[in-house]
Amino acid sequence: MVRNSLGRWIPETFNGKALIPYRDPFALQPQGMRASRPLTRVNPGASKVLGSLREAIEASGLRDGMCISTHHSLRNGDVLLGQLVREIDALGIRGITIASSSIHPVHAELIPYIEKGVIAGLECGVNGLIGEQISRGLLKCPVVVRTHGGRARALVSGQVPVDVAFIAAPACDEYGNLSGSSGPAACGSLGYAQVDAEHARVVVAVTDNLRPYPVAPLSVPQTLVDYVVCVPTLGDPKKIVSTTTRITTDPVGLQIAQYAARVIEVSGLLRAGFSFQTGSGGISLAVANHVRTLMRANRIQGSFGCGGITGYFVDMLEEGLFQTLFDVQCFDLKAVESIGRNLNHVEISADMYANPFNAGAVVNRLDAVILGATEIDTRFNVNVNTESNGYLLHNTGGHSDTAAGAKLAIIVAPSMRGRLPIIRDELTTITTPGDTVDVVVTERGIAVNERHADLKRELLRCNLPVKDIGQIQAEITRITGRPRPLEFSDDVVGLIEYRDGSIIDVVRRIAD
Amino acid sequence: MEIRKKVQAGTLQSSDLMVFVEPAETLSIEIESTVKKQFEHLIHARIEVVLERLQVTRGHIRLSDRGALDYAIEARVEAALRRAALEG
Image (cartoon, rainbow over all chains, first blue to last red; front, side, top):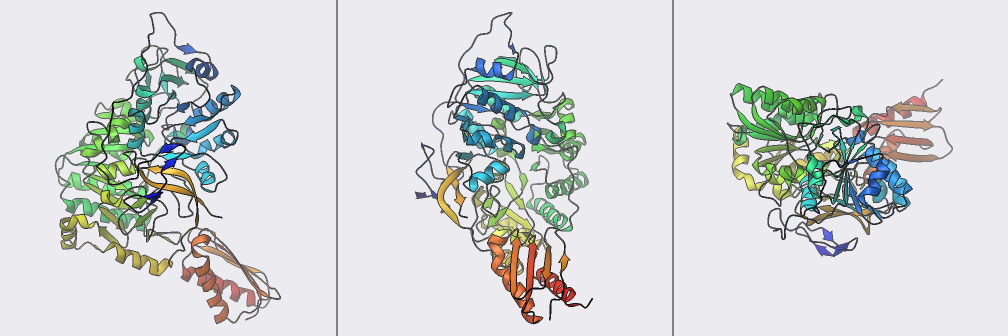
């Protein structure tokens, strides 16, 4: 065990691999070359279309101990990963690693296959029951949680070699050109899958919507796709994208959003060329709405909106408030429609979005980002992975990537949730280092990281309720009481990898 | 104060709690909570305060808590106890 720079104990190895303890957000330098794929040749007249998933698994050469991936753009509506694992089981293949871009609650259907040994490890974070069972020691399956940018880095650098990528393709032709923006399972951007298509040894497009050649516009081109398979359905469209994402109506959330918007305004970043990202949460959208009003009122022409894109950002694009949207994932139907229609609504890969080990990711160009938190400590470190019961329930997403990239990373969160105070002495898990978090906004006050003395002074001058983070914590704890710390065993069941591949924290089995 | 009958108070909404009270020969407290690991000791202490104030020495008190703050716990427990003490 060694202590990383945030004081977390990290084992020397995990699942047979040596670990690098986290030190700081920007110093770790990459080595080596970008990973690539074997050369191949498809002569005129050859067909790529196979009759079933099983045929595709056989054609791909998948064997015991290999690694497969899927993308999570179909989110909780995805049925492909479950189907694949059932077929892999039926073929008698064992010890598979799953390196999908994320796993959702629907994938709790994989649990029997983990127990049976079909799945031996998860090179990806998990949302939902699988994480809970791993945290409780009920399920044995090493898990490595990565950020969106960190996952792209792991594939691009060859750290996680994917043997076969199965890409759910909402529209696809018989030669493998595929697109996310139309079809019954339309999900918009396929930014995560683009990385897999470039780096997996074999690429299989799986579609429920085979279209005449050529499908355009392209998310992934024919040159990267080895096989095409038709299935009856890729998933339940209602669970793929929300029909609409909504601004919060909760007065606490609205207060937080108003403070956060004022912080952006006072920061001086809200000027011509402003770039911005929010998530799809109700508070984030309320901040976006304030920002939109300010941009309109002051006739500010922004540069780009980024990230998971919602209808609010589409409106801002169409209104001319942003020049471009960079979209790695569409959060609602309006975003899906827009990406097929607006030329300046640009599909970008997770590599371009957030990989720290390339010649510059989009997150590096962000002015402001609005992010959430499950817990925050007084050094501004943030947890989004584990709930306060110690269960690993959430994936990191782009949290650490955008916090590192943006000039102003603002955490918005209610001061308490169901008696649990948001600001803690010690986090259950550290996801994002405090060195990359600039401001914490709660309804009880605004805390500014000490690195930004100027911003703090400006906010105070504008009569905003700036407080020391310890003071906000004391105010909250007076109301909630001080929570008793959870007890964990020494068993490490998962890793929280920072975006550069170093280990920022581990997940330990909860002691029952 | 005497617990004469089986009653309940509260809701199961987030940040609220349900209190179930019924007559018994001895005093017993049962706590179920979404934040039991972190706050069971504080919830227990708060129930004790109300029991002592209303001088309840017998009965079965059961809480189903959804992360309520102390003032809500106190109010719900008191409401349940007073209801349980009513005639008829």
